[in-house]
Image (cartoon, rainbow, N blue to C red; front, side, top):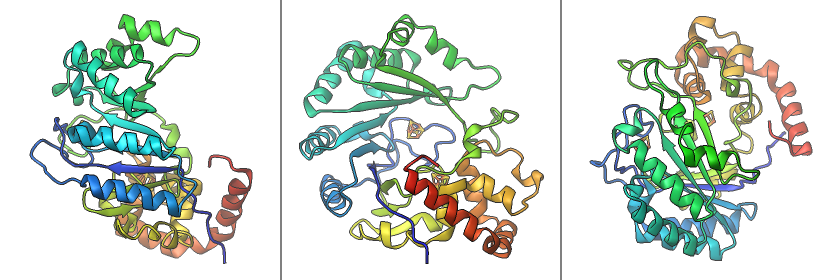
Length: 333
Ligand code: SF4
Ligand code: SF4
């Protein structure tokens, strides 16, 4: 029988669900009131164990919640990864850059630890807690310290213009105009978890819905619930099938997934395209603007689950062939 090749390139550590912010529609409902976190020992032991079991791992991503809440422990962990020959990335709301002096002092610590890249999340909801000015301080300090930085901005609402405001800043324009900029800026599909909030970007075609999920089989994720997760998608905590056991069971990542046809299918074609293949109505697909939204419907909606069970067998050979082809070519699906 067909089995998928499971050779992850990345460990994604959801260090804590605690955050300095409490953004509306945060996918993990993080806030300053939540304490759930992985300990330093749990994270470091997992990194050592996982990299032994999966030598393909090259990158460790520290995220949350807000990973800089770990303070000294975060810098120790980055240093440990650097010494193990791993590249590192931190995903942050940049709260630590309230003034330029403080931002530079964080950057010095990051350089000393050997950081590979910083990802900053911002936008309308984030900026209720972390101001535009703080984000600009962080960008300036990171770029001046030669640390690559990716800024991800939420899709703006009908009345906000966070993206344009960011792009109009001199430091951003100057860096983006360079031949080899250290800065990248992108917009992320904004997903409304609270139905009372405005829908943003509903009529736009979202390219990522056309493709397979490149997070599956590539990123081994650990969570503050002391669990291994199959992905770090924004809806993963709502999908039982993404939970792969305790953080001590590093082998589960391979054992539980290599012959899981639905995961192979999602990896190959994406949850949105699967729903189209099995004939899910346009009415149900309407309003989906993020692949993980499609994924949670595929797993949780009883009508869709039944359609999947009734129809999947006619897609098995086609999906296995396509998946194998991609594995052989080593191309992104
Ligand atoms: S900054 Fe990120 S982790 Fe923190 S509450 Fe906002 S969306 Fe959640
Ligand atoms: S699409 Fe599904 S499998 Fe992929 S990251 Fe999102 S929730 Fe996870």
